[in-house]
Image 1: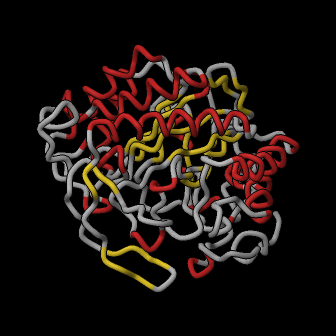
Image 2: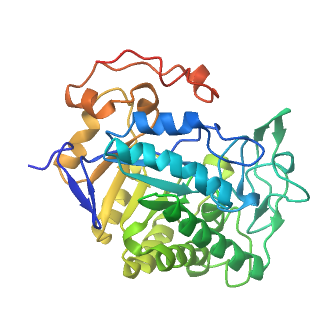
Image 3: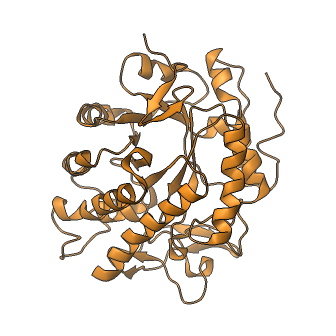
Length: 355
């Protein structure tokens, strides 16, 4: 029987186990130039016992930034700084993919340089607020991307993927979930376009498909992953045809042969779709399951019964840097101090007792 602690080949990259660290925003980059700090290298190196680390969302282009102090992969300084992170992880035997995240309409002009402004498939503002250096502010109406600008956004993902490999990452995960730009194109509530990028399902999936193809062409499909979150309403996303949408998306990207599909399960009742996607996808399948809590090893049974190849854990990894060891014994687990989740210093991730 396959267990979570068995190694797995991820399209040519050997993973020591089947426990993944899910991507989580940390806001610990230098605000002026978007370079990850020394704290970032320490943070990920501490978690190198994960089979696969997927970083926090990294903006592929400057206008893709949606939160304060998040890192980028679009400058030489950022590449150099990320190389310190990947080296630290590799020295401890870990594997790490960079998550490329364009926030689209989620953000605020106060977070961007010059005359940059949040963009989206259509000029439809998301309900809610985003935190800025001056406090919470309402989301603004995004600038609608022109056809040429959509293609530039695709190229931005590919360029950032190339930068990630140069920085020493083992690959990249394309963020197509959680209400950011790619899901904004997928969802009819945020995509009101009538051109080739909007309207019927085959047009709304086009941006995601083109990004996947461009990234895979740039760095190889074996270094490319995609994260999706079917039926996710985060960031005011509204999908009216979820099953059809994601089935069509998977059918379109399957010939590319990417390394993995990472599914964020938004609710237990979405499991039938998860299982259907699992059957349709030939590569490695990673599941971030919907559970009542993240403080036990129960989700590891999903590997044993074949539901998924890897299980991704989020917040539990913040409080427990050595999580695979703790999962093996089903505890003890440290409790996350939510007040320090976005702290800029070591508090919140280093000051925990070891097993």
